[in-house]
Length: 477
View 1 (tube, rainbow, N blue to C red):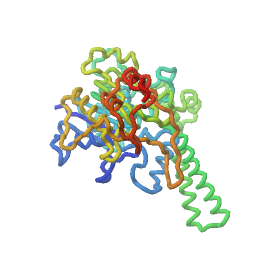
View 2 (cartoon, helix red, strand yellow; view 1 turned 120 degrees about the vertical axis):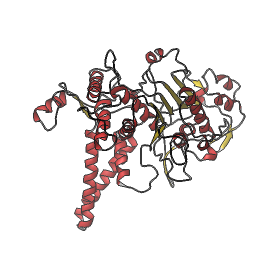
View 3 (cartoon, rainbow, N blue to C red; view 1 turned 90 degrees about the vertical axis):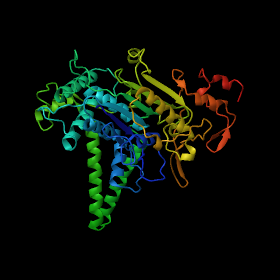
View 4 (cartoon, helix red, strand yellow; view 1 turned 30 degrees about the horizontal axis):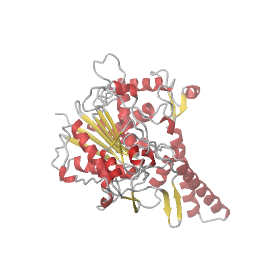
């Protein structure tokens, strides 16, 4: 009997369930209500779930080695790769023919599951090992399969426009080689052009990427420089060996991590698949340069692909998110949308909701989560309409949406006592191509609503020219 495989990838720093009083995102709330377990009536033979904690150090305090490594990953823009690998690895581990795969994410986690869908599109889900033996369900060999798919196939040519030569053709060829190696192509297809399994449903809350962060890069550079100065001072002032050696070791470890992360962004293509290029072979070094490139996602060319073979996709967008570093990541090409005309329910819906980033994706205290409950309710309704067989433990998921609920503003990058740094602000362009959720109109019609500690009419400038909202601005309010 086919089962549902649900993958949940949370926003930056979100580690759902760590504390009983934790602020929970919509993604974790959905996971909690859909996972099987001793307190759930959901049969694991019918549905399994995996929760991927958000990119970053989470809620663990202190300057740990893992936190330093996360800072370095964010600085060079590779932090999200491990999350994509984690999710894809679980899909391979759980998958059996006929299973339905559903992906959910918030913030960078939303971008993560969109990337996972495109890894599946390129690589499929492996069915056998190259020697014909079964695919391992856990362990280093499984991890290597998932890592190779993400690092050597999906990431090839990243940061360049889709279709740009020669990166696009090489990426597609790498995908074909992977599919042939693990028999993850579409059986009986006229031509091997994509993977054997596509997601049944993708539901995301306010996708952002921000894979490389200039401020974080400066912080990483400052940490390395400070350690170097401390080590030099230890030599100059003849500090004890038990001070010098740890400083040297930490400096070397961070340098190793940073170098490894930068090297991971060098992608190459082996023209002859029977003779893969090897760095240990000096005769291949020229080919490494000729067929290699430095690959790094950037704001202009984040991955926007959504294949028409994906069953259904839903995207909740935040009208009032204004941080320059959190722009909306576009999704889907018009040509793919045309292929889905007549599909019921519709293939793709992208809908605008009132509030900032976490007013849509959740993670504020429960008394302040009425706006995020609106987006959560909408996502659940769409999910049930598109995938009637999904299992939800309703006793674990109570929502109380209210269009007049408190709206927040995520203005500060960091605040430590009197030291505060604000995010650069650029209001989003609210495209009229996507509908406003009815709750937005209700909020516009309400006299005074709560906004960052004050009561005032809801009149975001982003909506002034939107066809469904501009009439509310004509009265001068």
